[in-house]
Length: 142
Ligand SMILES: Nc1nc2c(c(=O)[nH]1)N=C([C@H](O)[C@H](O)COP(=O)(O)OP(=O)(O)OP(=O)(O)O)CN2
Ligand SMILES: [Zn+2]
Image 1 (spheres, protein in one colour):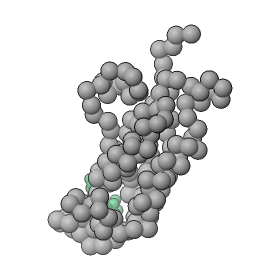
Image 2 (tube, helix red, strand yellow):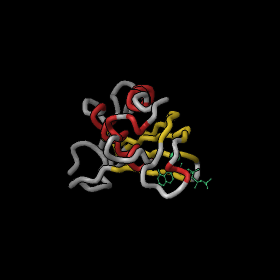
Image 3 (cartoon, protein in one colour):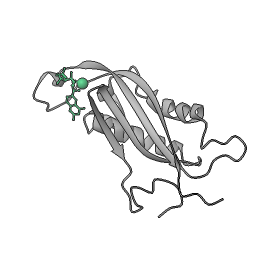
Image 4 (cartoon, protein in one colour):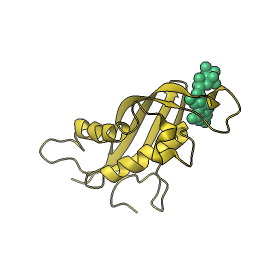
């Protein structure tokens, strides 16, 4: 059967960490902590023929948690990934995107975006931006 649609899956997790924003003019320049929320969304157009899912939510969340575990209960500024850039929500979303994207190479889905929020009212997204259409966030489509 020919289909025009595709599926997207989104998973959510969180971590706690300390950070300070160098060059920030204000209280965030001092060391402080957040309970960060993290989301990741993937897309694909092939369901597993037997189970009828794109990818097991559990598997996707495990891979996201593998990345997030490298940040949990750390001082983010001390991590190698943030030696030259501030651990802002923006940089954290990019870091998580790149690490998770690598972990999804053997999977049937393509990572679309990641999101990091310090609180419910402020969040940063990092999304794929390559030659393929932004909208065609799936493998094999150019
Ligand atoms: N674009 C971004 N802006 C800010 C970031 C960031 O990562 N990206 N980060 C911070 C600090 O981490 C700061 O700790 C944020 O604290 P917060 O309590 O949210 O700041 P406010 O005092 O402005 O919060 P209220 O909503 O007023 O309570 C700052 N900006
Ligand atoms: Zn902060």
